Length: 312
Length: 256
Image (cartoon, rainbow over all chains, first blue to last red; front, side, top):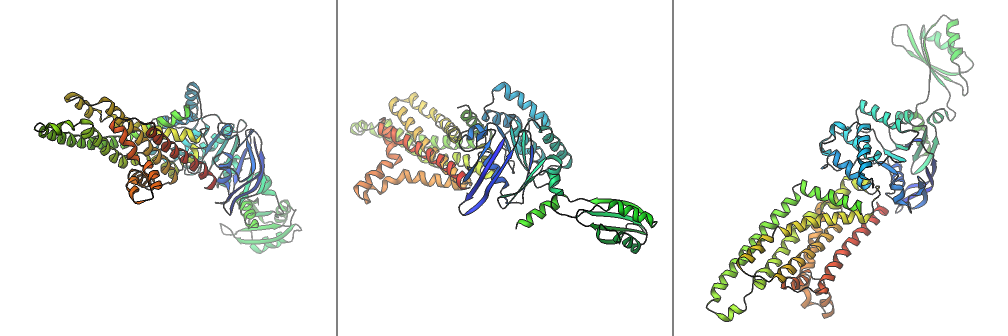
């Protein structure tokens, strides 16, 4: 659905996007990550036909973004980072205007407006002027216009910014509901959102694509040793002695626990080792009461920060 | 075509839902009425004096004493008012970022330019039409030359369209409405008075500058003469600025 080859955008001497290549299949939801100024928005602008690439090419829905811009534009929906909608129009007038610009016939326009108003939960503000709406509602109107023509490809730049937690859940459900039928490219800073919604993550940094993998792969990738957090009732020194004696354990840090007589320990294993069961039986053998034992997995934040700092 | 109409309707709705159109129309009609009243009063006075002087009476005409100066005065008012109509058109889309979304819809640059141009032109046509009661008064009390009235209005309409095209262009250059408005006013004023310098430059240059003068081309129309040269001049300037605007929209995407 999206084929990007060697995509590059230069502004004078500055290169905003440099030789980015990837391809996204139909029905995929792909997270597009990167620090501010990494080139995410520039890439989206090239894919939506707003900016012409300096070099390389991109095909969206089977059409070249540069030479067949109109064909691309009529098959995509786009929610820009700052939702720029005409404050003086009512939601009804705005969606009708967008429908006309998207060349939708009257009957289909009315049908689709009813559908997106329902899907985005904006029925109760339908006749209000957009300038008077709260930020959350404005964001939803922005999503509604992107969905209006039932596009094949949807580009969402930070869709949940400025929404309250309940609205965020609703919008995420909405986006998840689009999976399978549409290709969605979701640019965001909110990393848990990517883990929740996307099966695949593209990380862009300094205009270059530095990672392209499922979030789970990213989390387990590399050579990070497993870390185990535990809580036990017993003497700190006894816990340290019991755990550090195990073969798979590289180091142990013990600290005071939440209650008297309880200690916490963070255990770092040797690479490739999983010492969880050994720890449990070692503590049990010494009559130390094990209260909890969890493997601290790397969050996407950890991976993201690691990747981005490694590059610089 | 459908896209152009949708954009036209959206801009026109903005003009009439905000106070912009009403303010422009009201100011224009009030000032035009004031000029008309003065010119007519003065014409009345000289007519009474001319009763004693048949030679003077022969040279008196509504066209030269009322219509011609009235159209001249109106053009000066338009120079101030039309930039206020056009300065918002692209500057606001650029400032608010809505241009980014607009140009990812399947609309061509020309759809957008013409939709905006025609919307401002429609407001301007209403402004002109609202001054027709003055002319109706002339017909009630006298017999003005219909040809001169019609061609005068045609000339004024064409001149206004060049100002609007100029305004659309300058609006596409900046994301500040004030800069766009000021530039339009400056450029329009320059084209109005560019003929003044003719005596002080080389004859060849003077002839060219004289041809560029917007008022010189209005003169014929207000005398009742429709010259192809004048028609072509206004059409050219209008298209020239709209074309420049299209180039700006195109290049803005390459640079920004």
